[in-house]
Amino acid sequence: MSTDDLQRVDMKIEVLVVPVADVERAKEFYERLGWRLDETPPGIVQFTPHGSACSVQFGANLTDAEPGSRMGYLVVADIVAARDALVAAGVEVGEIFHGGPDGREPGLDPDRGTYRSRAAFADPDGNRWLLQEITSRLPGRVEAAETAFSSVSDLAAALRRAEAAHGEHEKRTGEYDANWPDWYAEYAVAERAGTELPT
View (spheres, rainbow, N blue to C red):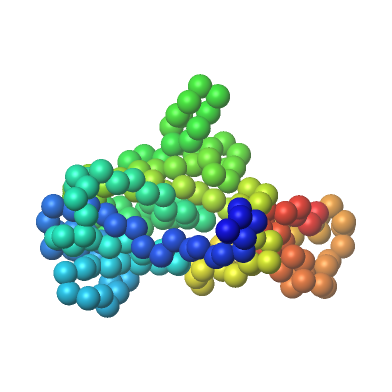
C-alpha cells in the first residue's frame, strides 16, 4: 500500500489512555469537568469532553505508563469562559498565557489570535491538560468539506464571531445587508476550514 493509498483511509483518533493511580479519584475529577461518562466494559472508565469526538479512558490495567505522564490539548473557542467555568467547578487552573517574541508571556494574546492563548490544569495524578483558544483553523488543518460543528456552544461562538465581523462589513459598505444569513454561513465555514474569510 502506497502513501497515496493511505491518504484515502480515514483514521480518526477515538480514545486516548490516561494513566492514573487511583481510578475512583480520577473518575470523580473527570466528572467534575462535566465530561460525559460513557458506558464501557468492566474495568474501563471512559469520559468524553463536551463537543469532542475523542474520549479518554483509564482503568487499573489499561496501561503500564507512569501515572501523571500524559499531556493533552483541549481546544476551546473562548479561553476566558472555559477557564472561568473550570474554576467555578473547583478545578485549579493556571493563569492564561500566550506566546510572545521572547517566549511565554502572561495574559491573553493582545490580538486574541487563534492558537495563541493558553491555560493549563492537571488531574489528581498530574496528567496535564492545556486549554488552547482556537477560533480559526490554519489552512489545511481541517478538510474544507468538513464544516460540521461539534456542539451547540461551538456553533454559537462561531455565530457570535460572524456577527461581529458582519457588523464591520456593514460599516465598510455603509449599507444594511439583508442577505446576512448567507454571509454568516460563509464566514463560519471559511473560519472553520481556515480558508479566506469574506470581507
